[in-house]
Length: 289
Image (cartoon, rainbow, N blue to C red; front, side, top):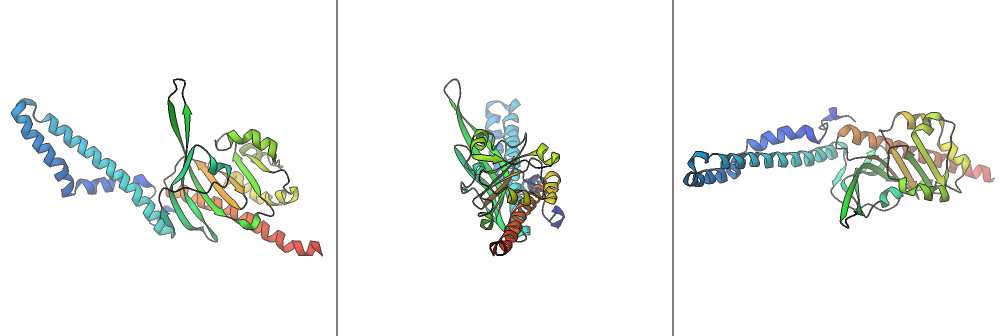
């Protein structure tokens, strides 16, 4: 889908109209005007010549607060409309299952927005914004919390567990999610090397050490490799662990185009895994005979 289906392009596209609506509301000016007027009357008795300055400050601060409220309301409305037009269930802050390294990061982790349901035809999953926190100690002994945001999409594909229990596709030079696991991966995982310069330039791929080489190469068919190098969102990566597939890009992206592209990208990977698993299952009885 594209934003032409009635979905706002992004959260900011609704901010102007919401700000205008709030400024046109009588209640808004009661909240701003009554304190400003009371302050003006008071200032007249103290310093008449400058009595207009404090009330003006109150009005400007009030307008700033109205803008902040409009921005918050616009963001909420964007997610509501996006969920409605895609037939998804909107959720707020929630914890996600720590099923893959990406979902285990930091000292604290959570989704700040979730959209659940059939995010692409045939694939039920979750789309949204993910944040993890890292608390670090500075040289002065004080602690600081750093926040890392991602846009993610995930689904369960248990059909492929027997054939591909682990798969990690990391975007080179982009996603920070697997950097700390690099040494662990080198010991407990196997790097996949394919005959594609374009793929090698963009991604690092790891699987479990005992993963079937033939199945892995079948999964990364020429058409899938072309898709990976040309179609996904910028800095796209994904992980598959015991049937849980999660795809992600850095930063919170609150626009319809990016959310749609993340849903499609995760769905494409899920469908490829399911198709290859189904084909393998069909072939298995014949090979056993």
